Length: 476
Ligand SMILES: Cc1ncc(COP(=O)(O)O)c(C=O)c1O
Image (cartoon, rainbow, N blue to C red; front, side, top):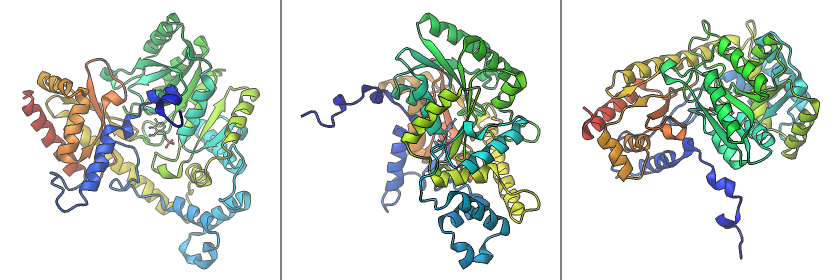
């Protein structure tokens, strides 16, 4: 009987790889369990989850924004507004009432594209951000940005010769989803020497190469601000990217989930691809993704996000609607989270002072940690690190001694995975090796988040480990 055997299933799924939750994350969980026992014998007292941009995870503990949680609480249990009237600011009660009147119980399915009122609020947010109108009927609320990315990749891959251009290093959602839908990842490299800049020329070279190989180039993914690099595209580069998409007739997929994670957001504000496309009067088809998982919201577990379509025909929008309706609707708790993200309290609202204090504090700690980490990592022999202007990560490069590379080979591991495993075993710090994001042949990196509290102690442990590792393998 064949039954549910690996060799009888969709073979594409066997090619899916997702390093963020890979071997190291599994080992970190094992260590975490072991630490609960009295005789664990581990040389550290806690596991530090520096591998994942999951702000509210236990141990990272980014505080949720009070306003968002109060609105969520009243939608979960509307009677609370009467039972504990003094526990909630007036604007929270008004917001929850308005959402409740529109949506009803959050235990019910909503419109498959997401509640109409919340989509209108998203459109208002986009219009205010960009200075160009946005159509709520072209917005799809999603269970996190991942669900939207997956839908678009599924729709775009029409044959095993369909390819999508992916930045390297990339967030592995893209290669993993492409593998699942049997599409071809077409890598283009970001330039570490120019602070991980996106080079339109390198994208063009990748397009030409793919076409020579008989690949139908369907779309270009840009992650801005970047994961794992944190890099921010400048406007002239964005315009060149849009021209390229026009010239080669490809869809632009703009992953903008880190748009509010800019460490100098007042001097270097985020510019969306939607704004650039409208400014240029371009007809390039654009899908932009956003999420409640990042920014200062950090509500990863609620699964909320949206994508906006621009320059996309009504027949395709109708097909998207059909596809999302197969899944009924995005989670309502995520939809409420999206409403709070795009419609935060305004000056004069009772919740505004606390909201402002909380968001400023989170921005400040992320910026300060990133700066300290980059400065200290750059002082280490055999390590260098671009100081990231945004997102939640640093992506240091390692120059590992030959003996370490040889030892990794003997152990059947990539050198950076070998380094990262020893780092985890000696310090409890869990990072993701660069091999999980893609990198140039012979290079080694790792990604760590700036979400970990106690940065001094944490970087101190990293430094001590690094020096010991380099000494052990003859690199000092
Ligand atoms: C670049 C990028 N895009 C998308 C996502 C997925 O986010 P979500 O939780 O909204 O699915 C992530 C998550 O880390 C990410 O880094």
